[in-house]
Amino acid sequence: MTNPWAIALTDPTQVGEARRRATSLARQLGFNEEDSGKVAIAVTEAANNLLRHATSGQLLLHPKENHGIAGIEMLALDRGPGMIDVEECLRDGFSTTNTSGNGLGAIQRLSHYFEVYSVPQQGTAIVCQFWASPPPPDRDSRRDRFANRLEVGVICLPKPGETLSGDSWSYCPLSDSYGNRHLLLVADGLGHGPQAAQASLAAVNALWEYAERTPLEIMQSAHGALRSTRGAAVAIAEIRPESQQLIYTGVGNIASCIFNQERSSSMISHHGTLGHEVRKVQEFTYPWSESSLLIMHSDGLGTQWRLESYPGLKYRHPSLIAGVLYRDFCRGRDDVTVLVARERIS
Image (tube, rainbow, N blue to C red):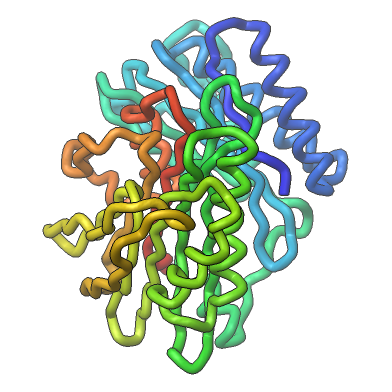
């Protein structure tokens, strides 16, 4: 899979770089010329908006896949003045900087999915998705409905200056003897760079190899699989919608939190490094409902965030939630992963 990509927009020359990177990514993923052009235009518009309006703007591109069809997710994040009226800002011809005012409207028209979260004096986050033609079809089978039941948004980026992240993540939907369940994993290899990546990817491989087992058994098997690596912090969450449960186990400093209606609970991980020193592996069970929200992140993200500080954010697309938390709490000196999951709102 092509690696995610991020750029801080501080100079007009970076708009051209963003366009070239986007075009290259689209072509690598098999987009045709027309669809690659749509991605390039949207990225150019987003980059120009960040330069004009943001005090600290970043553009993130993330490859996706659904039913074997390649996609690209773009996040535009800024700490600018925000928007008082989002709908007015989306109207063609609206501008606060004496430009043509077609930027946001053009991005919305060109993308298959588009959503904005903006708070005055805090900033704006935009998520949009582009799919190679044809876009992923609506599936009616029970298996497809289950696989698409969970919506997952992820940011996984390397430490500044590195090209390979020592963090990894995975999402595995299953229907087996335990029933319908969703397995989610976040792993942070010790340190950073290729050896850290080797350790975290070993945890991902263990998740898929032993997916039919319980989270506790997967973690125990992963412990053995990581012995030849430098080790990792790993957390596994299993969502069981039918029984309204989330089963969780963690080793090391992956922070995880579940939000149920107006309550939130930090989930428990034990100290240690998987593959090396682990004193205890234990499962914990938490209530899960259609309105629940799960957030898991590596220590590249600070832990002082509070979702209630962002009005209405917990009801938005998981990628927007991940993007806002990354924008405001990324430490900037380590690999960072933020995973957000919720049941898809129909």
